[in-house]
Length: 429
Image 1 (cartoon, rainbow, N blue to C red):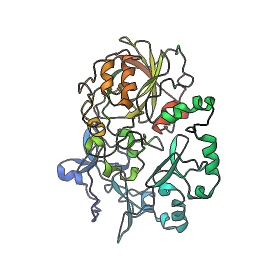
Image 2: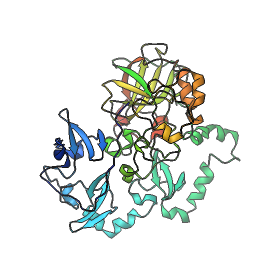
Image 3: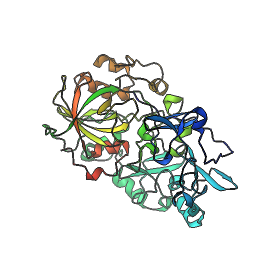
């Protein structure tokens, strides 16, 4: 239902540093005038593409009409953007180079400071893709890179000092929700936290009212539905200018977070033969009879949240709070494509490669036809599929009125993405 951002960029040993033009001109297209500020709309084997004055343009960070002080402080002297990390991928006579969001970037001269480099190695990931955990030693996830924790809804690297620190044991003892010896109250309080990566979180909704207030002065819009399992466009950092972290993506199991964002251009979306997919838990759930939470592809900015009230069909009068995890050039203004398993692939199908060919997903446009058909989906997605026939009453593309609101923690805990201006928005209730 939208353009998937993938890349087949090959890292060439010889780096072309040309100011006069960009690779797009050889294909008959213009160069984007402001590469760093242009949103990536599509990626192919040539590189990243954006839209400028209603026309496609090539995003080439070597094409930059002016040299700012910021870009002059790194290798390339303004011809390339500066890297946000100190990880060196290639070195030539000009200096040290890295790769960021699928494009070459110059290593900052400040990275040559030994103390800065030492600081980069204090935690898992070296502080590059994710920051070091500052206030916890609790290990939430471990992969080949090391131990990872979570602070304020974001992934962080566990500091090496935690291995020799009693805080690790204390945190595990105080916060281990999986401990079978916990009393029933602890199990009830933390059960949703244990399962939020596994299935939809029915009932989670904080202070959502059973009779939500009406939306006054909102905009009108339309809805559709989809579930294609593809890597979401808001999982690319270059598309998330308004948040410190992009939407969390997962590897093939749909549960394990994908953390090596600096090589996402190489690992690619599962819809393009890659290994990165939408996480299973980004599906809708009912909070009560009148309110649901969920996720959408839309024309709104990545990670922003909207309160929507349905105004047509059997679901008329009910409301959702949704977070935008996907965008695309094929989505019109005020259009919300609600993510619901079994809602139809649309243009792209990543589900077959993710889950195998033994499941029945329904029609490519429209999806499954009944609640019983949901039993033919992978078990981890069946709750979100049945939500459509239960709370959503099998509504077919109902119309809505909507307004932007502050994102509920229940949504941002799943995506890990919080808009920088979120605190300035009014709360949904």
